[in-house]
Length: 75
Image (tube, helix red, strand yellow):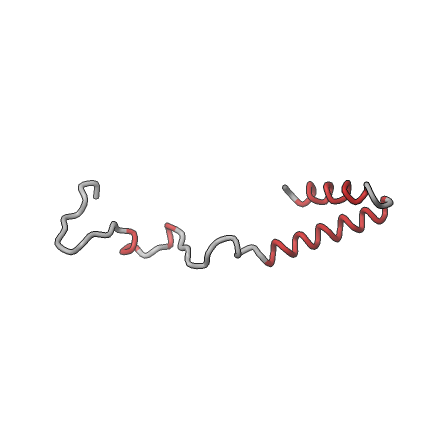
């Protein structure tokens, strides 16, 4: 949902119980609150310890094996 779609939904919801002028104000306020909420939570959706595959250390990307064990055939 983009901002326009959100605002339109908020406006229609407010319009069902308020006059048009007040519904516009309420839709504006709802949109501002929604944007503020998601901006403050933009990094909370994933744990901080997750490293993107391309950013990880190359030694940690290799398969784990015990010392003395031959590498897998698919390497």
